[in-house]
Amino acid sequence: MSELNTVKSAGVLKTISGKKYRGHLVASETGAAFYEKGNDTPLVEWNYTRLHRMDNIRRGGTSSQVTVILKDDSRYIFELDYGLKVYNHMDQHWADKPVTPKTRGDELHRLAELRGEKIQVPKKHLITRRHPNRSIAGDIGIYLMLILVGAAMVFPLVYLVGSSLKPLDELFRFPPTVWPQHPTSDNFSDLFVTMGQSWIPFSRYLVNTVFITFVGTFGHLIIASMAAFVLAKYEFPGGKMFFALVTTCLMFSGYVTGIPNYLIMSRLGMIDTYWALILPAFAAPIGLFLMKQFMEGLPTALIEAATIDGAGQFRIFWHIVMPNVKPAWLTMIIFSVQGLWNTSAATVIYSEAKKTLVYALQQIQAGGIARTGQVAAANVIIVAVPILIFVFSQSRILETMASSGIKD
Image (tube, rainbow, N blue to C red; front, top):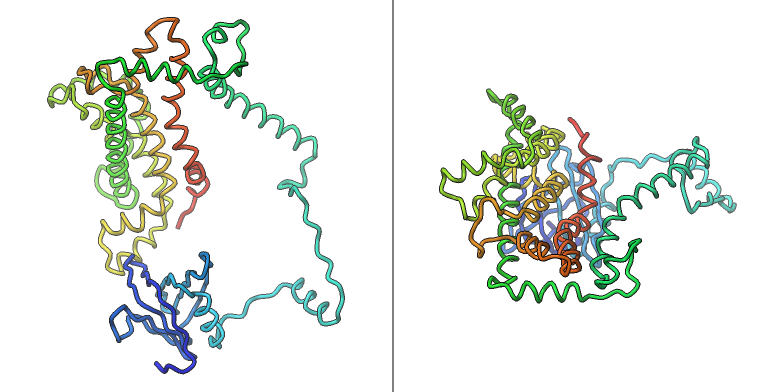
């Protein structure tokens, strides 16, 4: 490739199979080529006559992403330091690029500019109504209903936080107040003092709970996702019957399965170990059901294209399927963390050094009226972790319902 009138930019090339190559992209007047670092032979090379589509996404600063799609459906994604410069150069010399369709309004604006006339820009409203055929009274009624429902949902959480900040005399005041008149953090400090007086350190209960929650959630995510991938994208004898069995298991609560789980763990010799809680979490049916329903919405053509490119089944699952079902497994993590974090494990773990945080806090709650404030503080600590996880991932979780209808 001639060095005359060329543009060069360093970056990374990513193929559809997930492979990444570090090097630099060189664009000339006739075509472009990507050279891997330390190699003089181009790894990818094309002429502008082979271009079908080209997009540029600004990443921030001087870096940007350039996507090149050729007429033979080959796709290359470049993360370049000066991607906009390379994109503009290729677009300038791409003679037969598709013509951008223009509307009648665009043409009228162009003619008005040529005549020197002032173009009337439509006024933007602060609030855009989605349903202009609905009356204003209907909008007000819907918003009032949403406000009432939202207030009813947030009231228990506000009352719980307010109770944890009340001094002892305000906790027993009648009628009770939602928010304390004299907020104090004594309940939390007293709670940690009480926990510190136990012959098992408070940190031990916390480590036990974090370990059980993390391992149980991770195993549940991997096992449920792999099983859901097979059930959703492959047909085999007994597959439908197995999924029907999983759906039936959703009707049973943990109280019903408590005795069977105890008998199984006892036969396996896992009573009074962490695995008595972790292994049943691996087999929770909610994760398999959720992941399978979401994976059915993935286009099968996407998996077939990756297979044609030479990707193995595990690579397809890990690099293509899992990133595309991120909203589903984030939702599953919420359910799993909530179940494992709030378990007391009193029926399968007997050693005090292996008890969970919720069990320790429940013992404080049994201390009588004098510990009412500490009980409120303990409840805030128990519910804080699942709520924080949901807050930080709520945008992705809501996509589980929004994008689950995509089909081939």
